[in-house]
Amino acid sequence: MRDIIINQPLDMHLHLRDNDMLKLVAPFSAKSFSGGLIMPNLSTPITNKQMLMSYKNRVLEAIDGNNFEPYMTLFYQNYDTKFLKDIQNDITAIKLYPAGITTNSKQGVSNFDIKELEPTLSVMSELDIPLCVHGETDGFVMDRESQFMDIYEQLATNFPKLNIIMEHITTKDATKIVQKYDNLYATITAHHLLITLDDVAGGFLDPHLFCKPIAKRYEDKEALVKLATSGNKKVMFGSDSAPHPTHKKECCGCAAGVFTAPIALQLLCELFIKDEQNINLQEQNLQKFLSSNAVDIYGLTPPNKTITLREKNYKVAVDYKNTTHTITPMYGGKTIKWSII
Ligand code: NCD
Ligand code: ZN
Image (cartoon, rainbow, N blue to C red; front, side, top):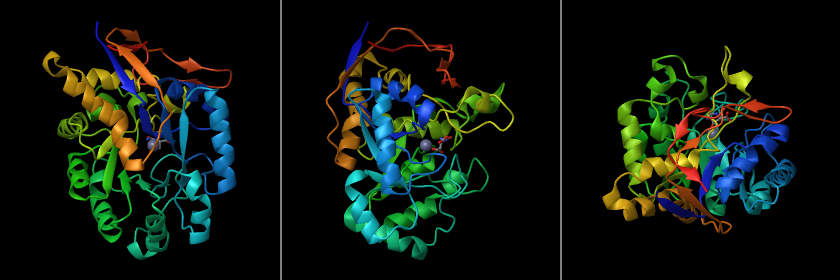
């Protein structure tokens, strides 16, 4: 039985939701991670300081004394210098959503003209506020991310001092572009390292694996695995754990999002720790993907926390409930190969 220890694991793309859902899901992330980048797409997106601070307090309350730092984000809109200077120290990044592309993104950006974005992005660049981007067009679902690569390249070249994070990349194209520009970085989820469209819709439809961006082809998954497991400094873990109530997943009009918070770390161990001969290197690369790369990219000082994982079967719960909500995790009811001890 092998044990591995991860220091200060970070989840740099996390949906914790609000109210009773927040109370149900936050402890899972707080148990596995030292901190997380908290997404701002609540049903009313976070667009001002008062909303941000009160949401942060609700998050801190929900993690209930667990040593977990919520790195807060703001929902991208046109913001002026005064506003950004005033909120700068309370946020870790600003998250840009194309309008209507995913859950609670109606108020996102519909015009990607550089001229339109310039006033806000140039101030963010000056103030060193990173821009996180949900990079999808409204084109054919399998091509949406690839079609967005032009926009990433325009952003990267027009704002060379702005740190831009390509969120939850899913394609071989994205693995290339992220390495082409110094100011581009990326997060990768656990599920996109493990599944393809075949797992979502190749047999019986699995709504619990349906998310935006949709899982792609085998060659895309292979390119993602290669990049993530190589220790490359441009990529970091972001679970995109995105819970929706089970009845909103198992229905017609299934909501997009995969809930992975309780098993993400264990799944990454299974993926990275493969071959006996290279255990040290594999552990080092896992540590980079899960923590040090994000620490360097964002300049973070996460709370001290070490998580020990054991190569020991773990039966994933069929669902998790409180009095208000039931949610179904990825691989609910299945057995995975690593446990947190
Ligand atoms: C996310 C959600 O539900 O908030 N859904 C998803 O499929 N990933 C939003 C997002 O990150 O796209
Ligand atoms: Zn997300």
